[in-house]
Picture 1 (spheres, rainbow, N blue to C red):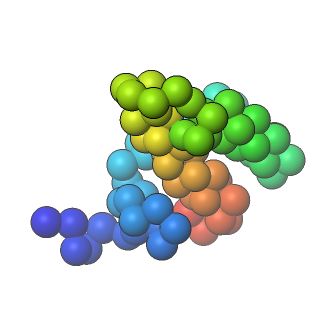
Picture 2: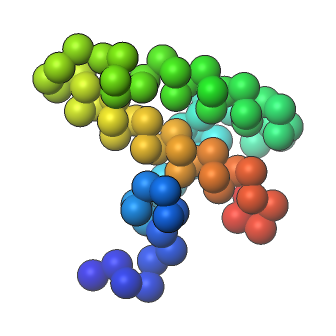
Length: 81
């Protein structure tokens, strides 16, 4: 039961499922907001589920895409960062 776990409204995934948001976005812990935006945009374009062939690769891309979104949302929020 994860009623007490914070969720990202856009993804409906608990934010604590992304243990290392910097690692998810391939960033150093001293990354700037520009670095965070650039990495998020690059990875989300590369792994966008609609750009993948059907099947397992698309499912993996969907999972990665959601993780990128959650990590991005954590890192751009000064309180969560």
